[in-house]
Image (cartoon, rainbow, N blue to C red; front, side, top):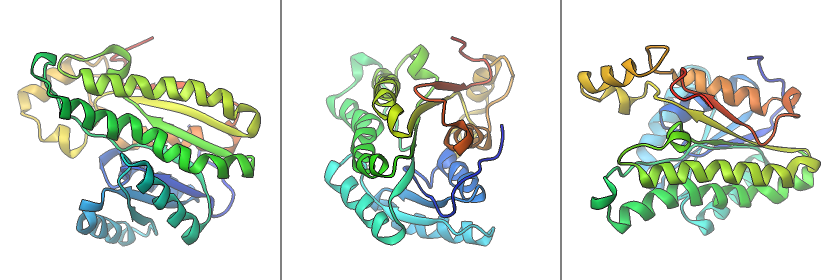
Length: 253
């Protein structure tokens, strides 16, 4: 995929930006010339500072900001703070996500609500907070990080698969509203990706997953970041409402 060409210091916000996939996205966007702000949960303040120092250590000046994206009020506060520091958000990557896996028979209401709030309601909360500035600017890029399991479902993940499927319904609808205004809205649906979480799996579990992937390997965070970079680039402004699968052939539609 081609490297992005962007206006100088265009501001990009990545929710869940200090996670495994979020980190790769932040790094790629910073390398492509964006002024990147990585969101993290308020409880992760120390980890976020260490993360920011790590990025500086490899020559990347990436800002961090605390914000509970499951809260509409805190999302608005966070976006206002970014605007005051750096200017309005031109690119938003909704990457924040959690899992609370259980079979439906054993799933409690709090596990359902937590996943819907963080993985799906956050997409409304943060996008709604940046949308008016994008409309005013006549430019915007929104990329929602969904999942292959939002396309095919997954045993023990009714909450997660529901949230991830809902993200693309949001994408297709909002893409229609933004199309004439210079704003694109797209989804990226990763398959299994090498992150701290998947690398911590038991070897036999990880091997069984890999055996089911036609490419016989997990994806790399940089490969997800490359898909995001493609979608936010100025020259790809005719791509909107799309769901770009990056899953090694695990699910084809």
